[in-house]
Image (cartoon, rainbow, N blue to C red; front, side, top):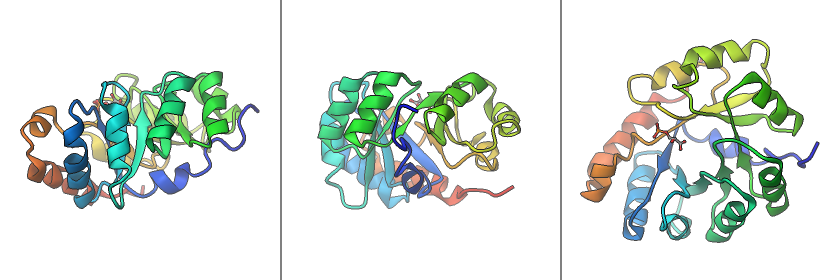
Length: 216
Ligand code: 3PG
């Protein structure tokens, strides 16, 4: 057991919304209007991936938006975790996991959602104390059928699947008992962001929010 209750705080964050927008923010000036549009549509828990030069500045700006809960995605090493925490992220997301990332997030008290795609990866993270995981890349590794199959032998883990989720397949994920919410980028299409079409994004967020979490 490396981490001290590494999921602490995650359930309260993930359980607030059916969908977490996964954002790549290229322009710092987009951060506040984009986050505000998403939150006004009901999706106030937001993941900003550390894939752009502006990501940390965007996290800092969004952390000042009342009601928004901002996390940092694409955490690949301890330095990412430290920078994310300093910028104001209140949770971290990684496509996978490593002991250094787990230890860094634990000592920073940054709740971490690590990624897993196989039974062995899930078991390894369970042994580290995690009960909430990102299932990634969801569609490419078997989609909702794979997640449903994993729930049999691994009933005590809940997932936020991401990767290839869209308006056509999102409900098949939300219907699963082992899914707490999903993540996806479709709510904030890059062309809508670059054209500042905040009303369109607000509408997409409201549509996703209205799906709710579906019980079996
Ligand atoms: C992620 O970073 O979690 C995924 O890349 C998001 O996947 P999507 O762009 O297919 O929604």
